[in-house]
Length: 226
Image (cartoon, rainbow, N blue to C red; front, side, top):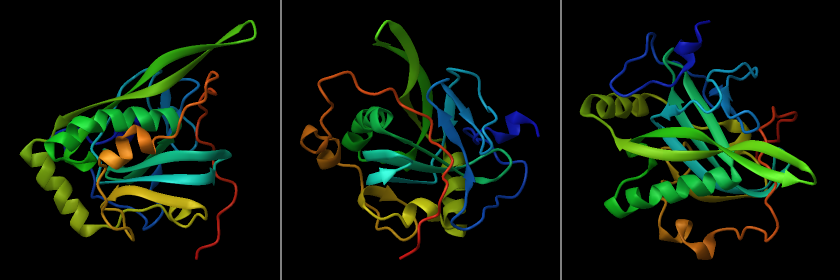
């Protein structure tokens, strides 16, 4: 498989094959925060370390989970997009990268747009922390956005009319509070507004050094559906 074909569809591009996806089970992409790169479902890298990753979201979901992937009381963001093979695909991240995303969203909210109205360039940015006598390196995600051209906007609107976007594994979790979403099957569209971005609803960061982010692990058990 040519790794380039697994990159997300870019501005003005069309997929090389028809758009396909299993309902509730999109193709999985993961972010490795230890190495600053994006991988496919089997862990093989798609990008180099610190290489930007451009995503044009078909749908997004922001939620708080009491426990998910061995992380407690964290906010998570899910994005659905198309890769160059035409696969409906899914990426999620949490904690401090979510906060960075919300800060980048502020300008969009002021202008009356949401996360699905733009193309997002997601860039792993190197950080360090000192643990004892050891300096540890990790990568947080930074976000920038640009308006879609008309060809790209129309194509994505067409795809939204033909498919349902959600991931059954995360949609059926217990202990979840929905915060915001757009085009997510089974959820009412709720914009990211001031009450979400504002400090009064932001989880307070601990006074001590925050824990180093970890890659989202492969899930080991499928929760029961309601």
